[in-house]
Length: 383
Ligand code: PMP
Ligand code: GLN
Image (tube, rainbow, N blue to C red; front, side, top):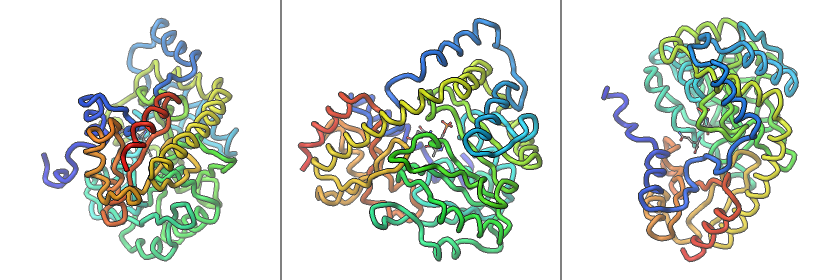
């Protein structure tokens, strides 16, 4: 393994899911639902295979998916993208993020991101030979947010891009208009590219609205907007993602992506297009059911002694383990299967500065009610 990748080892998701399988624990770690997406959309994938969509699709994605993504962006956010030159299909949001950073960031450039951050960001920044500058999200009045001065201080002459993940994994924060305006101002002032990870765009609760950064004045021209089907339609195994960006940025990403994977599985693309066009009402039902699951898990975890931060979006809750007498989330996550038969994700691995995240553990609530109830029952004995 090349020297600069040695710090990354195995992702925490693979480690913790393997631990859950090995110990037969309830897996509230890796974020994937335990019920399938909309039945007609699953049928659309089967129909696509049966109808012969089994050879290489075009490198930038099948036309019907690019058109469905463009329609969705316009309908929900008023953002207009040309499906031929400004929409690009990728192997999940993960490849979209990788290809974007590899295409747009030079060796030695700096990339600003918020910590805790989704683990692939750091690895790809390193792979690109760039340097990350992490700005901590700090718990303020029951919600994780950044200190504007810390964000300003992280931006310097070598900064090329900023990664903005909202709704945010793992804190559940949805950046509000004031926070986004500040980010937008800094992007414009310092000529930065914004890479937005919006995979949880539809998983928002309590009427809190997801605002894409690209909708702020001046930002559409400098934003690579990323999303995918996995979270919206409960099909995380389909790995179908997309980028919306101005044509020159898409062209740059395409130059890299064509040599990473060239293209993305045809049946999933056709089925994702069906989902975007016909299943958004199903997604509203999913969102409401997740809001109830969030409350169910929060109630149980609070009774078990965790201090829970209530998320406005995503399907994760960030919990402070100190009230239970634990101090290190990684130690706790590794012993939780033997202590309680439950697996969680230690969020300290998403921080550059472990001191900020040491005492947090993340639980997923995209699970059947009976699974949440059983997990909570097991965790009740921890104290
Ligand atoms: N970004 C975030 C914030 C995520 O939580 C995930 C995990 N689903 C991804 C990206 C990856 O998305 P995909 O499965 O579409 O590659
Ligand atoms: N996005 C999911 C999570 O945060 C899973 C990611 C993965 O398995 N790489 O749990």
